[in-house]
Image (cartoon, rainbow, N blue to C red):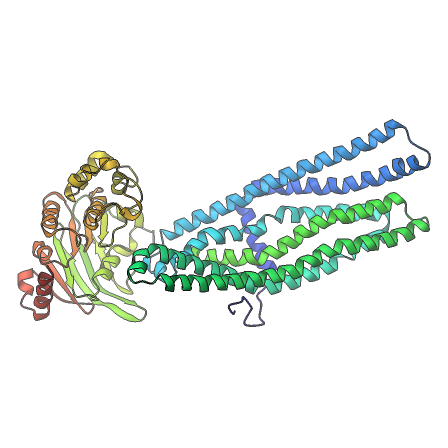
Length: 588
């Protein structure tokens, strides 16, 4: 498909059957309100036809005799009352259809968003490397809205069936010739809708994809505002957004052209039908085969069928867009979630960690190649290696954020892949160098679900050497830190994140350069406190000599392989290790 939303090939996938399968999937999710909405549409349809019958009879029994010879006032009042009563019942059907139809749509949107939220937190981290954040935001926002657009006219479209049956019987009873005249309009409608549905699928896909692209660029520009400004890329980012917005504009204009071609056809059909009914009706009245009331009834029925025909056209018009949006959502929901099979073992004290012949590659390039080592219960082990040696990848593997290509990781003797993700997080904590804090209070950031209490929060903050600076803040633990913790320094953010990991009293602790922004003296105090007061096996990705020296053992990674393990002093005999830690020391 080109930038204007035109299709690259003549092949067009089927629309109607998968689209209706999608809509009735929504119905299965929320059958109650949808059934009531269809009932309201059916009431409206039946009494719409009934109103034409009443008006036709009033024409023959009240209006025509009244013109010729007059009628009693009671007869006139009875005719008016009948027309008003039918109109009130029709109005009640409209209210019922719209209220419960909106309820069905809103509930399906809530279902989509709930499923997407659940999937976002269960897919492995590799998923987020493949899909831009802005596109995922578009899935949860624009795609959810668009995917249910075709749901709005569905109850009335089903009610149209009732309306057509009632109208058919009514016209058949009035005059078969008038029935044939009105029925001749529908093949034109069907052909027009079929042509439109086939033409619109490509541009609909282009619009939704362009929306995701614009969302991604806006998200990157806002999230990386500091980088954009420091690099002087404001104009480049504006140009990038303008180009994406221009592609979105072209796609929507192309969609608009198609709709502008389709909608006038629908608008013109009733006018053509009225002319045809008048011509045929005049002939039938002249030969005595029909009455004026029958012609009036037929014209009213035709005018009344305009709205249902437009609703049916709207359904067929929106179906391709909704199907495209639903398929984009399904792509996310079909992503493989982390296994959630067996429960994690009950671990009440420090657990050993075994890494056995682990391999991992990214985009075809080996990152870890046969990594094996162990961490004994209660031991502090430092992972040391140059940039690109696989340290952070190993941390992601150890915390189940990504999966190894082969090999096994065991905690407490249990293979990591067999553990329940939720139970695993109960006894294991991970802190990254790049921390994320929510726009909430300090206490809420340390204890997000609020189930540990203030005493546990303060204990964790003391272990992380954060208690003193938190108390010095305007509202202490009740101070709101701003989005991503912007009101805190880098070292303070890291200590709050560390406290968040410690509040659960983990038995396995992973620190991926988690104290890099902390003063070396404070870092030593933190690590000493963890060694003295935390009953956990600790794995530290280290970039400081002071951190390395505090570890019981060191695992030295080089080019994705374990070059050596041992104490710091033992590994100093390896030239590449000595050069690396010496460089760490020089950086101070």
